[in-house]
Image (cartoon, rainbow, N blue to C red; front, side, top):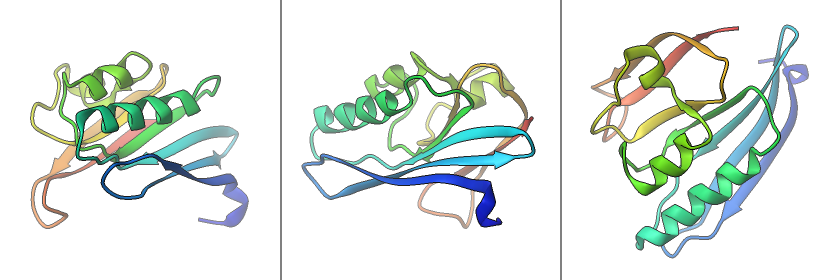
Length: 138
């Protein structure tokens, strides 16, 4: 990706009782569209820790449009962390398939207005759990 496509890049650190949690925030330009992309991988020993981490990252998106929020979130649908996130964003799997991805912990959340053309969990060879990708219309 040419450097002129990334107009803003910042590392974000959130509190954890287990390990340092580093996330990324980037602003990426594709054609005349600007996307605010967040990559997150929360972790903690206590449930309240991961809830706090997710609240902190969601709060960073306030006032931004075209948000794509990606990560190995370590939470499943209907958890408190998931509910914190879908209160603001749409679950891309739900947009594409009409249901939640029950036992998966990789997610892509989107601000309203995106059209998901394809979504797939890759079951083998990526990690200790299925990897997830989507294709969107811009």
